[in-house]
Length: 374
Ligand SMILES: Nc1ncnc2c1ncn2[C@@H]1O[C@H](COP(=O)(O)OS(=O)(=O)O)[C@@H](OP(=O)(O)O)[C@H]1O
View 1 (cartoon, rainbow, N blue to C red):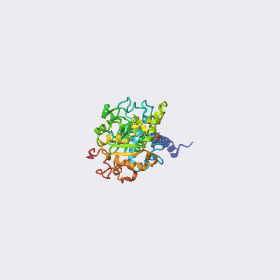
View 2 (view 1 turned 90 degrees about the vertical axis):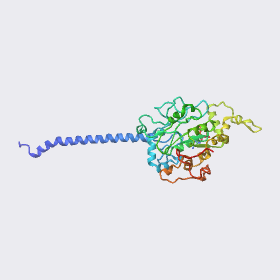
View 3 (view 1 turned 180 degrees about the vertical axis):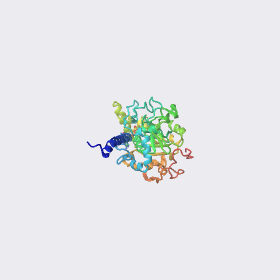
View 4 (view 1 turned 90 degrees about the horizontal axis):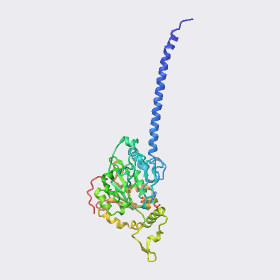
C-alpha cells in the first residue's frame, strides 16, 4: 500500500481546522439569533406598552400610527415631533397601558378611569397617599431611563363635571409634550391638607418643555379652590369645559340614577314648583350649571386670559385638530419650540387672550408672565 501522499496529509490536518471554523460559525450564528430574539422581544414589549389609550379614545392603534390618535389630531402632532413622541413613549409607558373602569363611588361622583398599575397601590384621593398614578412600574424602560422630574401642574382642567373633561384631557395628553395624571387627584377640594409635596408626587415625570396637567371637575364649584391654586402658582392655566347646563344636569342625574335607581325623577328634583316654573337651585345638578356664579370666585384670583373655555358640545361635533391650536393659547406656543408655526384659530368661538394679553398666546408655563390677577 502506498504511503499517504501530501494531499491526504493535508486533508487529515485540515479536518479539525474546518471543524473549528464551523463551530465558531455556529456559535456566532447562535449569538446572532439570540441577540435578534432579545431585540425582537424588547421591541414587542415596547409596542405593547405604548399602545392606544383604551376606553375613551376608542381607537385601537398606537397614537401616531395611521388611524391612531384620531380624537386629538395625534398623528399630525406626532409626525411633527418624532423625537419628542418617542421620548414620551418611553417615559409614558404606564399611561398607555390598559385602563380599568372606575369603581362606583358612594357620593355618586364618577371616579376617573385608572391606569392598571400592578406594582402600585392606591391612587389619588384614596388611602395610598403618595402613590403615583402615572409612575413607572418596576422593570419598564421609563424606570430604567429615570428621566425627568415631577412638577406641579402648570395647567388644570377645573371643570365642569359632566362637561366632557375626560375627553378633553385624553385629547390633550396625546400630545408628546403634555403629561397628565390619569385619575382625578381631588387635591384642592379633598386632600389639600396632604400638602403640595403629596400632590406633586402624584404627577408623572416630565422633561424640560413638557407640561404637567391634571383634571378634577369638582374644583370649579369648590369655593376654596381658586385661592388654593393661586397660592400654588398664580401662573396656573385653567381650562373649563362648559356645556349646556340642562344637558349637563341630565348627564349628572343619569349618572346618579345608574347608581341609585330609587332617586326621585329629574323633574321633581329640578322644580320647586312645576306650575310656577320655580327651579330648585340648591340641587347640585342645577347648582353646578350656574357657571357665572362659580366663575366669579375664579376671576378674583385669575385673569380671564389665563382661562380657556372649551365647548363640551364641540368636543363631540368638532374635529379635534381644531381643538388643539385653541388649547395652545392657554398651554403655550409649544410648536415654536420645535420651529413650527403657531396656529392661532381665533375664529373658533373660544376666548383668546384679552386686551393687555394681546392676541399673543399665553407664555409658556413656568415663564414669568408678570400678570396680576384682575
Ligand atoms: N369625545 C368624547 N368622548 C367621550 N365622551 C364625551 C366626548 N365629548 C363629550 N363627552 C361627554 O362628556 C360627558 C362626561 O363628561 P366628563 O368627562 O366631564 O365627566 S366627569 O365629570 O369626569 O364624570 C359624557 O356626557 P353624557 O354622555 O351626556 O353623560 C360624555 O358623553
